[in-house]
Image (cartoon, rainbow over all chains, first blue to last red; front, side, top):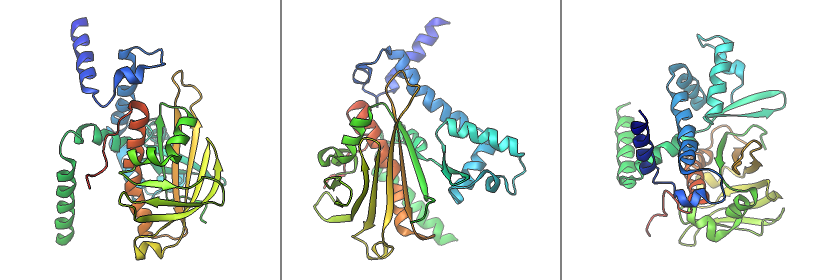
Length: 146
Length: 154
């Protein structure tokens, strides 16, 4: 089905309007399609990493308390240490988790930058100010309910 | 200063370490991705540093602790415009720039950490919300020449 593939590439190109392709292609050996693939694959990795409930749980735990060791993260979880290690590797590969050495400890941090970039890809097309006002309203109203 | 930062933000940018360093230290360039705000300093260790609102009011201030272009920049940083956050004292913000070794295309990894010597910090909460937007803008500007979010109209 080469024609379908071509068409999907075309629409990917059309959608990648936050990238000035000619400009980004300057001084690189990449063709247009490879460049699109580069951006989309980085985003694919983020979506793939987020598509698993256990991995989202790990992100939630880091959101609640940033900078945890593997032991802390495993504490109270119904997951084996090996499973947590595997999930963390996928999250790190997607740049959603980043690690720092603190003495002998390896600390895990939630990195929200890729999620933010995904949001902007679509949100910027609408009126951001109104969205911010709406989510602030929602936050305030829900706070009052507590 | 606590050795464990409160957050670490990482992004990969298709640029050179030198260009990224220039982007982080040139007021005219900073304005384009920092929502109209800019930094002023001569970027030498021990020199004063300040962050200025678009209208010229002082936002934050401090001192350059380390400057090793184009790899590492550490700023002693205190809020100046909000009494409560100002009272929290100085934080330490570190920018680390690394070339990505295996990239056939040139790319750098930018890591930003921001730490303060206290457990509950309003200031850290405030900057932790701002950094992802600033970093996204910076990435977009360096890779495509335009920002996703322009500064707010005055």
